[in-house]
Each structure stands twice: as C-alpha cells, then as structure tokens.
Image 1 (cartoon, rainbow, N blue to C red):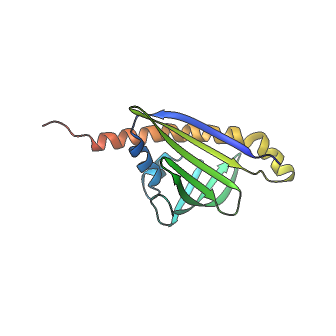
Image 2 (image 1 turned 120 degrees about the horizontal axis):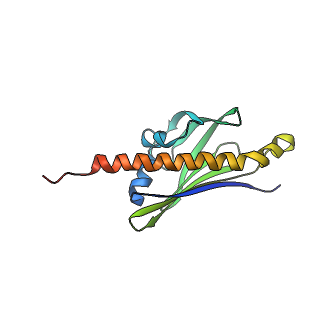
Image 3 (image 1 turned 90 degrees about the horizontal axis):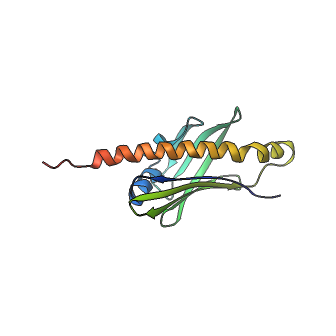
Length: 155
C-alpha cells in the first residue's frame, strides 16, 4: 500500500526563531494557529517542544477523530508530531529565507484498508492541504502579533 502525503508551504514574515517559538508552544501560541477543524487540544505532558504529548480532535469530511501525538525535534528547524497508534507523522520545517522564514507543514501516513482507505486516498490529501494553508495563514498572523508585542518604540 502506498504512503499518502499532504503538504503546504508559505513564506512567513518573521525569523526562524520566532516561528519555531510559536510552533513549540503547545500551551499557548500553537493553539492560536490551528484552523477550526482542530479542536479540544489538551497538553498531556510537557507543553513546549520535544517531549510534549498532546491530544486533539480533528474533523475532516464531517467525521471527527480523537488523536494523540508525541512531539519530537530531530533537527534544527524541524518539529515532528508522531501520531500515537498510527503510522502518521506531521512535520513542520522552518528554513531561513533572509528576513523571512519559509515554513512547510507536511504529513505522511499509511492509509486505512478497504473502503475507508479508498476514501482517505481520494479526499484526505486535498482536505489536509487546505487545512495547512489556513494554518500557515494563521501562523503569519500570530507571528506578526508576536513581532508587534516585542517591538520597541524609540523613546
């Protein structure tokens, strides 16, 4: 069975360190970037970066599923959310692009078997891509607000 893949990428008007700080902060700022399809985020362990364990609901195609994930940071600028109990990994990759950060959200997973797997192959990649584009737009808004909060006015 072939692995499924969904991804979206955007340039974010912030430094890599600012974007990574928002993505790592599961107790606070990360919640603000989630589209409405992601609900009931609970931090079960940790809360900031690697070692964090989260639970959340995701609604796709009218169907809501409860999931749990373990957060890892295998390399600088990379955060992975490993779904517990399923071969599925969502990777956030943040690269320095001068004054900006190129940010990519990508999920790879093994689809279910049977009819459910067929439907998953047909619709899930497109649905997730749309969600990730919304999430990246939200990320841009959140880092813009963070940048405004931390800016100092000459005085």
